[in-house]
Length: 340
Ligand SMILES: NC(=O)c1ccc[n+]([C@@H]2O[C@H](COP(=O)([O-])OP(=O)(O)OC[C@H]3O[C@@H](n4cnc5c(N)ncnc54)[C@H](OP(=O)(O)O)[C@@H]3O)[C@@H](O)[C@H]2O)c1
Image (cartoon, rainbow, N blue to C red):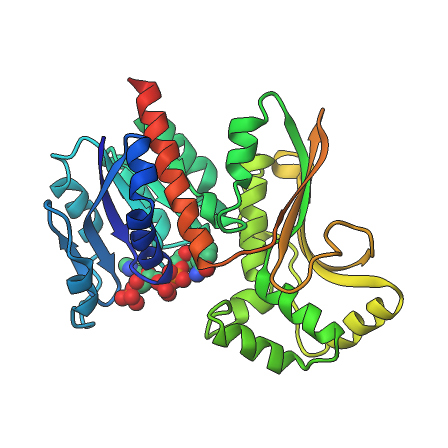
């Protein structure tokens, strides 16, 4: 089936996704999926639509002067109506105060009868319950596998492979930048040097406060809690700790005692009473979260009746986040074929 894609946000993730669609052409064709990017939107390049397939190279070369037109998303989704399957691929910048503009983009897509896939944490961290309800009412998919642990299928694992399991809690190391800096500081490296290396590698943002102040981990905690524990919360509502130059001494001392200091995202309980936090914790050396070095991430799910399940991501990164969008595309195509 031909699937028309609208890339809302055309930055690192969206560009890698577009490339991965080509690299995965054969695998997707074998699943009966023929994706075609017909529209794109960026803050400075404005919006573009071509029903015959958008020239993304030309879109990228556009002068970066466009003013933001909030109505553009709805207009383009309308232009896309001749396509039987329309998908919004949301990868705009996360605004940690509100989850916008992504929430509005998702809402506009569902209202127009389109499916949504996103690597942006905003919609699931700030408005999961409302958007999931809107998607259900519209009979469309709202998928966000790339929001936590890049391409590792956390949400899909629970949704598709753990039927009749209750998730009672989770704990994880979910931010690569802070884990890398903590690991480096244990070995005597200065905070600023380790952070600069993460920025050079394109892992940490130019403004690193989203990572080091714990906001990224808080957004992931809210996303996990909203989906797995029905918490209906936001990143702003949870206790949050970050790391800084003064964390070095604690990391070194913990290591000297055979323990390790980690920035742990955790949640237990259910609904509004779920206990959620992002906190620095000193872990025993044999804890599955303590053994993570550098940019590695891991998440432990506490479940009934399956007990504790740990999933580790040893190789995160842009390509893996792009893969999460490809996996979501396959999931939504499967959802569509089940509807028929
Ligand atoms: N990078 C990763 O490894 C990674 C991993 C997991 C999740 N994510 C999430 O994926 C999303 C994209 O990340 P990225 O690294 O691709 O970011 P990026 O390179 O900064 O790209 C962001 C894109 O969003 C566009 N944008 C920003 N505000 C907009 C608005 N109001 N309306 C329309 N477009 C807007 C930007 O437009 P201009 O280009 O015109 O400025 C840019 O094209 C973020 O939410 C991020 O948290 C990223």
